[in-house]
Image 1 (spheres, each protein chain N blue to C red):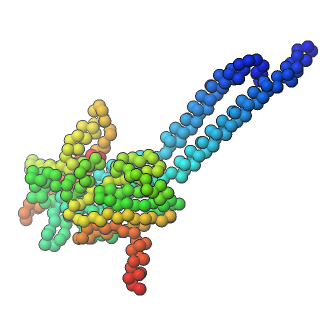
Image 2 (image 1 turned 45 degrees about the vertical axis):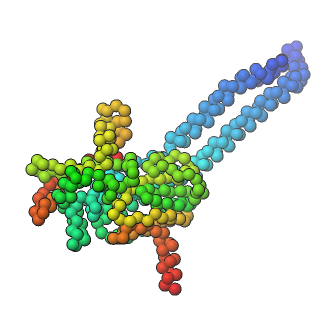
Length: 178
Length: 175
C-alpha cells in the first residue's frame, strides 16, 4: 500500500480514485441495462388481432356476411354481394366509421378484402384504406425506412356469394396489416 | 537494518498519512454500500412493477371486447384471470381499455396502443366499437387475486360489469 507522506497526497489519491469510480459506474450501468433488457414490455398481438378482425368481418351482423332482417340472423360464410358492392364502390368508409370504429384515428390495423368469384370480376373492399396504402410497402423486407415495422397476415376463406336468390361459390381473400 | 528502522519511524511519524489512507478505504466501502443498496432497490422495483401485467391485461381485454362484438348473436361471458397480489382498476372507455395499478392510481393516462414502459403509468389498448351497438363506459374495480369481469352482448348493446357487484345487487333485490 502506498503511504501518503507528502503535500498534495490527497489530490494524487483522488486522481487514482477516478478509474475506480468509472469502473463502478460502468458496472452499475451494465447491471441496470442487463436487467432492463430482460424485462418484457412489448407484447405482440398482431397475429391474434388480425384473426379477430377477420372473424368479426365474417361473423358480425354488421360485417360482410348476409344478414336476414326478417329472421334477425347472420349467415356467416355467405357473402351479401349487394353489401359487398356497396362497400366497394358507394360507401368505402362505412366499416371504419360504423361497424368497426377505432375512433377518429386507427393506427392499429388495416385490411384489404378481395372477393374472388372466378368469373374475373373481383370485388375489393378496404378497411382503413389510408393506412393500408401507407403500410403495404413496409411489409416487404427490401423497402428502406420502416421495413418490418408492420406485419401482414393473409387468410383465404371459401364462401358462398348471395346474389338475390342465387348463391355461388367464391374465395374471400384477407390481407390484414397490423 | 537501518532501512527497517527508518520505515518503522516513517510509519509511526506520519499519522496523517494513515488517516488519509483510512479515509479513502472507508469512502470506498461507503460507495460500495451505496451502489449495492441502489441496485437492491432497483431490482426490488423491477420485481414489484406491473408493466407486463398491465400491458397484458389491457391487450387481452381489448381483444376480448373485439371478440364479443364479433359474435353473431347474444352473448354472456365472464372473464377471469389471476392477478396475483396486485390490484388493478379496469377503465372501459369508448374505443379503449385502460388498466391501472391501484397503488399508482390517479396518475395521468397513457396513449392507447403505445407500449407503456413506465411502471407507474396505466396501460391502454384500443378496441373497435360498433356504432350501431351502444357501449357504456364503465370502471371495474378489481380485487387482489382473481379478476372477474362480465361481458354481455344483446340487441341493446355491449355491457361490461363487475360480477361481484352484480351478484350483490341481485341478492339485495331478492331480499
